[in-house]
Length: 380
Image (cartoon, rainbow, N blue to C red; front, side, top):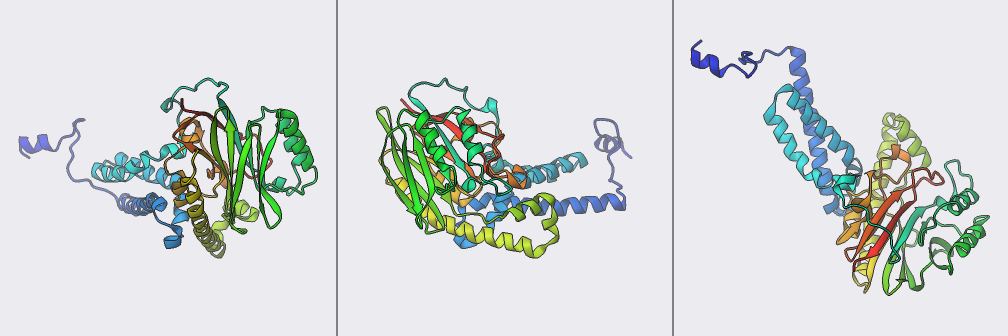
């Protein structure tokens, strides 16, 4: 070997490079890694496209968007393995696929040092809580109205509270009304009614000067309320979009992994999610029309039944600020089943307002959702 070739074939640690002599198992591992990398990468690219494709066109994309965080971690792990194996070109190609996801990480995980320092509360700011109470039933189907009232009585009461899956004829519901009447100097409330039943309720210590509802006739409901805070008015949209149709049994089997052995159940869940996503998209078209013709600043909250990587979230959140992204901390889940993987409850607001803080109460296990709270303020 010439001196020139010897220099070329040497690495910084003085080990001869030469041709890699890999065992059969080594080559098999590389082939398997390549197959996994390609599969996860294609799925991640599809997840990137999900917010821009209407579910009525391709509803099955919704299920891919739900698993976007897991897909991103899998692709990142594949890239790390390519680096360890020394396949730098392969690692670089995978990294390029990861780049678009870097701009969406804050939708799922918020890092404290990446946001502005928390600002002090003042009289011009107000707190808002959104909570899907699942008809006031716990995981065992038992009524929790008394426990919830006691919990709220021993906590700081938000200035505005939006409930989804509210049920007026629950035994003891008068205790909730009584609590708000005691804690507020004057209690204002507005309801959204479907088929004679209250499905959404908004309580406010500030005057509600007008309200209305956008009913989906059993396929999701939205309620709007014009709330006056000092000299400012904002339109509040309280939403419960159409369900994902994930039953308690489905959640239990998904958590335990038993669902993997039942292909028919898995396909049933995928079809339900796809079909219901199309229903939510239709509802959002109407909701967006009302939002776009609102003369005030907007606050949009509630249970969207869709993740940040979805068409519905993108349509509603267009030109709005997500309070979690602005002031949240850690992994932002709001749906307790499915290993706490999903964020489907939101508080969004106009750019003419800002979030001072955001908080999801992980200790509140009265429903399958977590209550979320934000302090908002009008920009001066």
